[in-house]
Every structure is written in C-alpha cells, then in structure tokens.
View 1 (cartoon, helix red, strand yellow):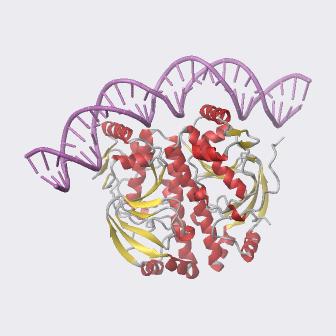
View 2: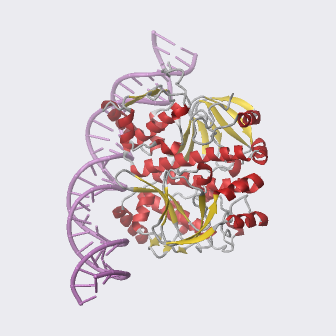
View 3: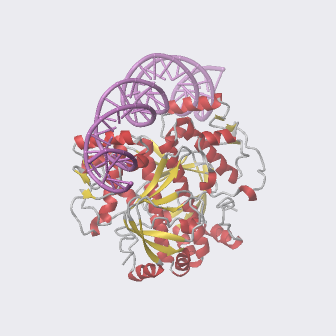
Length: 250
Length: 250
DNA sequence: CAATCGTGATGACACAGGTTAATTTACGCT
DNA sequence: AGCGTAAATTAACCTGTGTCATCACGATTG
C-alpha cells in the first residue's frame, strides 16, 4: 500500500477503497534516491509526478548569487510535484533532502483518472491546494515573524505534518535536515539559525539536531511561532496512536 | 463576455469556445463592491467562488498584533478564490483593495463541470496552480531579496500580469494601492516603503503613485528584483500590445 | 471656513540579523 | 585508528530596516 499516507487525516477528502486502489495501479515504478539528488529542473517538460513514500524532499528557487530559498519541504505521503500534471513545466527545482523512496506516477495515468473519476480528481486537486495553503503560511512566516518565530513556526508545522504521517509522537521526530537547510527555509543565514537554535534550547522550547528534533514545550513553541495548524486541513481525531516513537539515527 | 480575461495568454491552456461558454453560464451573479470590503473570512464554509472582472483584490493573513501579510494580489481575470471549491474552507481572508466588479460562480456549477468536462476541469485546476506558483515567487521575494528588490519584483510582476490583462502597456498602469499596501505585500514597514520608493524614483527606475505606476526602466527594474516572469506561464506572443515586455535576466 | 483624517514624507536613533573569520565537533572513508 | 571534509559554534563588528516622532498636504465633513 504505497498510497497509505496520501491525504491521510485530511478534512473532508477521505479516499474510498476503490479510489486508493486506482491510485495504486497508477504507480509505474518505485525508486530509491540518494540524499541531495535533484529530480526536477525548472523549465523542463515533465511527463510524470512523484509520490514521496519515505524521506524528505524540497522545492526551491535559487537567486542569481546561488543563495537558495526553499519554497516547500515534503514529508512521506506528499504528492511532491503533482503540480507538474496540470502545469507540465515547473517554475522551481525539486530535490531530495535525505535518502528517499518515491513512487513514480505517469501523467497519462493521471489524465485517465481525470477522465473517469471526477471525485478522485477533485481530491488530487485538493492535495495541490494544501501545498498552496502551506505556501501562504510560509509567506506569513517570512513576512511577519522574526527569526525565532520563523524557526518555531516551521518546527511546529513539521511536527503536525509528521504526526499525521505517523512519524512524530507530538514531541520527537527524525528529520534529516541540517542548520543550513533551516536557513534556506526561513530566509536567514546559517550563523543566525545557529543563534536561534541555541536560544530555543536555552529557553527549553525545543532541541534541534539533524538526527532528532525534540519539542520540549509544544504549546509555547507554537505560541512563539504564532502557529495555527488550521491551514494544514488535518483532522487528527481519526489518528491512530503512533506505532513507535522515532529514534535518533545512529 | 465576463470570462474574457480568464486564463488569457496562459501557456498551453487555451480555452475552447464551448468551454468559455460553459463558464459564462456557470456565472450566477455580477456584483460591484466598494473598496476595502471583506468578502471571505478564514474558516467559514463557502459555496461559491469569485471571478474578478474589474479592480484589485487581496488575500491576507493577520498576525496576533493585527499586522497584516498579503499572500496574494488579484488582477482582473483572476479566479480569486477558486481554491475554495476543492478546499470548501479557506485559511485566509479575501477582500477588495479598490472598488471591484466580480462574477459569482456557485460551487454546484463547478462540480457539474468537473463531472462533465475533464479538460475544462484541468484548466480550472491549472489556474489555481498559477496562484501557487505566484506564492512561490513571493516566498523567494521575501526570503532572498532586500527591500528595494522586493518592491522592484512586485512592480515587475504586476506589470506583466496587467499587460496580459490588457491593463498595462508595459510602462504605465493604474493600481489603486497605497504605500501601506506595498508594506503588507513586501513584509516591510510603510516608513521603509516610502524610503524605497524615493530611491526607485531617484534612480529613475519607477515612479509609484496610488493612481498611476510608471516604470521608467523595465529591464533595470526587473534586474533589481531578480524578476524572471517564467512562473506566470504567460505567453505574450499572442498579446495585442507587442511593445516592450521585460525579459528574463540571467 | 475650520477641523479632521488618511496618506505621504523625512529625520534621529535603536537593534535584529548579516558578515567575516576562526575554532571545534561530528562523521564518512581508507 | 587516523584522516579529511562537512557541519556546528562562537565572537566582533557592521548595516538594513524598524521605531518613534513630527510635519505637510489634500480631501472630506460639520
């Protein structure tokens, strides 16, 4: 069941069994990718999209000096570049952050789905609009929060998304990111990210390590980041208890 | 022809005559709204979406101190909150910036379109993904550009979008925004926006007035804002005003 | 006609975050 | 185990933007 995590716990878009089965048959290939591997280049025509099964991926735009702005971080269950199905050409690059396992879905299959199954099509559409909602939350983060708030907001967001994917217990999760990734996400320098992480550590809000993120005080962290999870459209009522606490990668 | 500007000049999604006709019949009502009128509140269930015919609208998120971050500015031809069709509830507010004329489209009509016309449905989907692409460009703007760059980028973007809508000749356009709107768009204070506008004026790049924006040097302005219009998916080849359109800077 | 309000303009000062550079720690590889 | 490189940490200093305060101007409005 490769699509197990896709749209899990999303308000009002429960996938029917037949719909999930149809998606499963649409998958062409399963691939494992090394960390820091570019998979999509802006401006190139695409004929397939990627469903992320394991690991973390990013979408980003580089400026003319090579400085990078991440515009999205994807977690298992995300249909990373489903945008490429209607758009055909992307405006940004896509790459793995950690080692990753992905399912490749040809656009021909997606087109067939839009012809046959309008309800499933609307759910695919929905999933791309969640990405847009997350973009907007990131705009708020960059436009209105200071450095500490931005990092707190990102960690709070990632925690909720990983809870939904069954990869966080609400306080601890593994995230393969390094400090300069955070810098590229939050529009800051890695020197300043380091200062912010120290402050969050000293104030006992959270401890960020590449191998393991530990949130000591989720409420306070969310307050510092003015984080309101409504934009994720996640309903964790229906969440089963996470099977296992993530462990540090050793 | 209310849908005249919708998806105009967008690469690869030309609307067929029948498709346009179908959209026209989907329109329920035409409304005129005063400036600064809130039309959608975050968290409320929606059963209709708005196609903007005349004027400018915005989407925004307020922080807990009442500071506002605009996450989108909409120009005539934009299907402002089509996102609300798959999402049903929005994560942000929507309001007019200037006086505006809008067409109201009930979601029941859109649902019928997704049942009957998969090709048109994909084009509607496409149009929401343009919004997402613009969100990403805004993330780049906020994350990687300094104050002058942000304003230059926004003005360049708006110029191209308005050219596509037939509302700019590439150098002059009317935009009802005031300096504090720019501040809320660019994540800056209005005091600093004022300084930036003076600099752009003194450097003979552009003159921003609420009534009229004049771009004196489109290429240089685009360069300052690292503006590359690819993300707008606009193909102005077919545009009636062929004159001088800003080019990607490399 | 004065009073008020929204908008724009500008100066003085403060500070969050950038820059640069050096050092330490962690970790993959032979 | 030891080496080489990437990542993390920290300090000193600098600057872009925020803050606060004031003034000017035009459009309403009483």
